[in-house]
Image 1 (cartoon, rainbow, N blue to C red):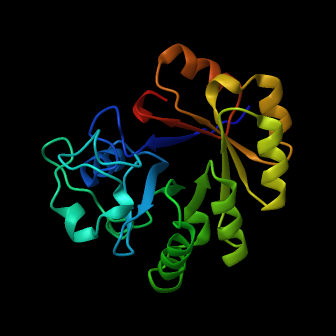
Image 2: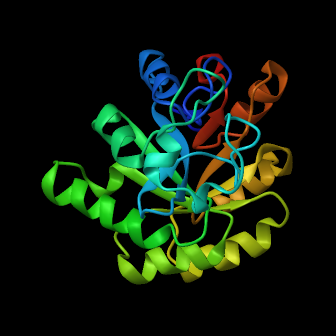
Image 3: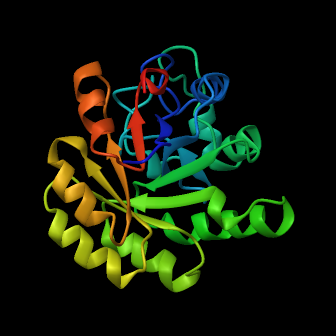
Length: 228
């Protein structure tokens, strides 16, 4: 069993402060997380913005797809009546190498700009590639990252088929499998760990947390990382 299981805040600390906001990420840092998971989309003016949903409807006073709005338009919106949609650059400036950053590519055409930003932070801001993990459900986005820069650590996300995730992960030299925690057993975690680190998501309640910790996973992604 791993003596040290990384505590990863989900979308900042979604359980405490509205997801994917600078305020949520700041709270995660205050709670002493080992890493923060965020989601990105490419907006119409070309920047990567930190937001989970394809559309603005659930969380903001706007509507329509995130990708069809410019950054200037997105910045005018309020998230849950009070917060602003941050850019990935703003998030990285705030985190400033204090913990691991897991960037989940949600929207199309996010891979190239994510690679550009990561390279910039490594070359100009003193970050290391190991400060990052780029993850996605979408194999095509991870393939693009791998082709652009095979030094960027990759994580394959799955909630359906571990065998398929593993087979794909080997083709892009991924370092981790990010699995829905309900898919995991002590046996398959041990098998996965022969080749990969195992990240379990999204584990929030105490009984599942105890169970998943007992499996010896490498990291747990949680809305409440302070419970881990």
